[in-house]
Image 1 (tube, rainbow, N blue to C red):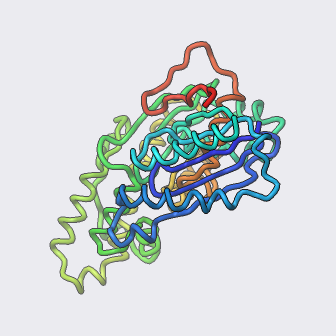
Image 2: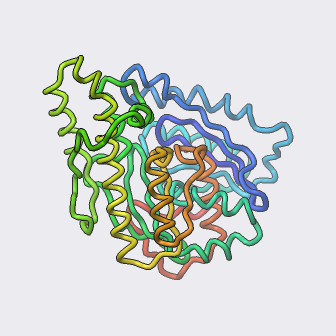
Image 3: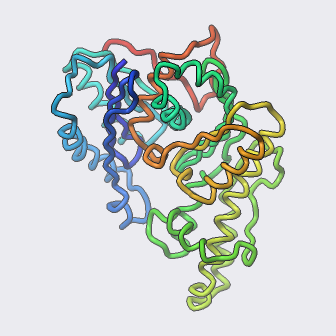
Amino acid sequence: MNLLAVESSCDESALALFDSGVGVTGDWVHSQAALHGEYGGVVPDLASREHLRNFPALLRLLPAGFDPAALAAVVVTRGPGLAGCLALGIALAKALALAWGKPLGGVNHLRGHLFSPFIATHAAAPAAFAQNFSALLPHLALVVSGGNTLLVELAAGGRVSILAQTVDDAAGEAFDKGAKLLGLPYPGGALIEKLARDGDPAKHVFPRGVADKADPRFSFSGLKTSLRRKLETLGDAALAAALPDICAGYQDAIVGQLLAKTRAALAGHRFASLGLSGGVANNTVLRTAFARLAETAGLPFLAAAPCHSGDNAAMIAFAAFADAALPTPPERNWALSFAPSLTIAEA
């Protein structure tokens, strides 16, 4: 199965080529982070305009030997995401499928993130993927990004159950908005992590939104409020001196909540593997803590590669492949946020 995938859910324009016998054979992403940094966050209209500008350039990066006739289908992110951005990606995918006479398929963006840690599993042994994948189920996964924070169970046949999810902000949003309060440029999550390396998290302790580990909810809006109130008590000089410690404490509150809920889920269920994906998965403190948690639980740890943690088209292609390749039970138990990929139909 050869696929061309399109991703445009937010401010990354992305294309990818996937060969089921090899893995990801082409992966191109154009980020708009520098452009939106001027405004302190993603501006939807601006993001849509940039997709219109970037996709023609990305299409020109397809290898010289690329043959549309070899494709099984064109697949595209169908949501969730920014409406205008999604519309442009879908329009491009529909146009390509029509021009090449290929089927068109839609893939849930979150399902792409969920499956991204398995891209390396497939690439290591493509012929044995179905067998190796089944051995890793049921799989406990934390999908954590700028727009989503979910703890889910991936069971046999690709069935998904949400075990916990945020009731307000996502963890990535908490990082970026916290950075904005601290006067750091967008995107600020990586800057908080960098400053926190020289800080002591015990000097500024921030509250966990939902302290009860067994409560199936994440919450980060109160954390931002707590940071704002703390900053109101500090002058510029005091803030500059305390910035590493504040960043360390703020990061510790986010990572601590994610870790506590995941640990509680592991204690209450039997899983065969632990996974981490989404843009926040690139946070080394979170990644290291999850690796240790998996080791303590005696489970394989699967983390999305850094290049596949943020929004990308490779994960969309892979999720479409996995849906087609893996056995599916007669009745799917899909959670609303993880609706399955659309049945591939003629464009």
